[in-house]
Amino acid sequence: MTQSDLLVVKIGGGEGLDLDAVCDDLALLSIVRPLLIVHGVSETMNRLCAELGIEVQMLTSPGGHSSRYTPPALRDVYVRAAESQNAQLVAGLRSRGVSATGFVGADVAIRAQRKAAIRAVVKGRVRMVRDDHSGRIHSVDTQSLRDALLTGQVPVLPPMANSADGLLNVDGDRAGAAVAGALQARTYLILSNVRGLYRNFPDEMSFVAQVSVAQMNEAAQWAQGRMKRKVLAAKEALAAGLPMVIIGDGRAANPIRRALGGEGTRFTK
Image (cartoon, rainbow, N blue to C red; front, side):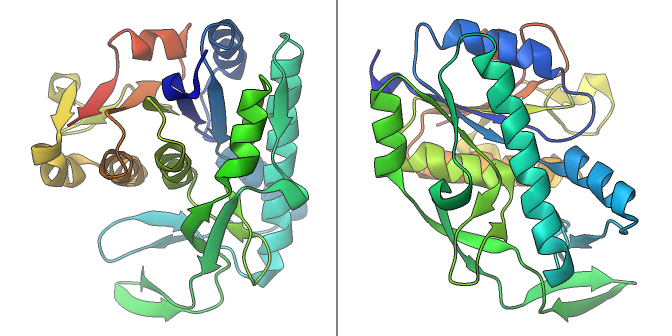
């Protein structure tokens, strides 16, 4: 196995994904090619907030991109949720014989700068939000990740980044794109709780199987809700040199092998 065949998989954090099926697939693939996992945290975070009686709030940019609002009081809860999800995924992989390693705590491999101000639409008006602890990714600690890959490990990364302001919430899809680009992966696969991209979701007749670089602006217009971030992540990964990005369905049996075999939406140069 060579790192040039690296597959980076982003496992969505929303409801509906079959994590057992995902881990089964990862265990089989880890035998034949190097893998790196980035995961989401949304459902775990929502559940933890419900247990603590904390209201979940989202920020929506003027362009329609949504993100989790993480004020100072919620930052530690977010870190707790991300580390819990990471530990669950690492345990699931290790139980299947995979040498999975969680990059949490002092080992967080993504670097970011806290966004001093975010433009968000609040009650129909654009406001500046200044207390959010989300970050803009600027670099990846590739050495620690390469060292792990060279020893046969599967790095498992949460959607968090180190910064001068401490740990930050970062978008998992874009984090996966940044890591895949920094390591020059062969393929970046985003597993979601939908089949892929639609021109008019959820109309099955509008499903999009292939998107070229020339169609990226159109694809961004077709995308709705969280899919906008996934399309943006695909665009960033291609710009970083990857030959292919796939958005696949994480709810099905053999979700990774099915996506690699042609299902889902493929973004190519």
